[in-house]
Structures are given as structure tokens and as C-alpha cells.
Image 1 (cartoon, rainbow, N blue to C red):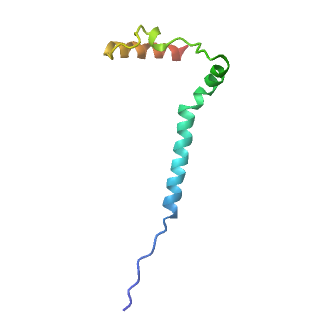
Image 2 (tube, rainbow, N blue to C red; image 1 turned 180 degrees about the horizontal axis):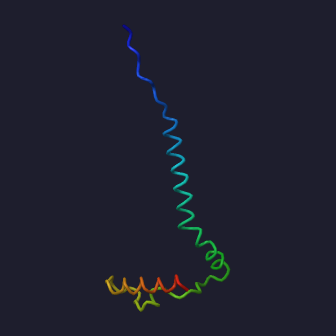
Image 3 (spheres, rainbow, N blue to C red; image 1 turned 180 degrees about the vertical axis):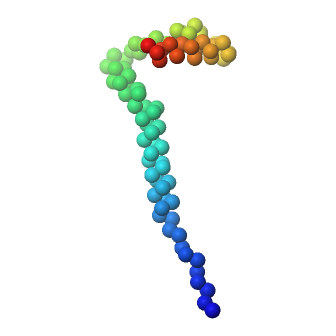
Length: 85
């Protein structure tokens, strides 16, 4: 009676899957986090001035004030108004 060794599995599909997942993750993060700011970066490189008003100031929150639920709610409401505009 001869013993047969178990079939060997290749690591290649696992490595390719991991590399593919990593590439997709990096591309999606770049798209979601950095691409929206490319136009703003081009604008800032020429003028060096941020033309948009501060979201915090628009919500009535003073810079440097401590965190609070009312400040968080005001910020959320202000951000919602900006998105609609």
C-alpha cells in the first residue's frame, strides 16, 4: 500500500487576489479622498488664497472652542446646507 501525498495548493491565486484587492483599495481611496481636491489645489497654487468661507465660522463655532454636541449639530446642519447649494 502506497501513501499518496495530499494535493499541493499554489499560493499564486492568494497572492494575486491580495495584490488585486490592494490595488483596487488604493485606487478607490485616491478617487474618494484626493481627486475631489485636485481642482482646488490648482486654484490655490496660483492665488495662494482659500476663497471659500470657513464651515466652522458659518455654523457659528469659534475656532479653538471645545467640542460639544451643539457645535457638532451646527456643523452638520451647515455642511448639509453647503451640499445642497
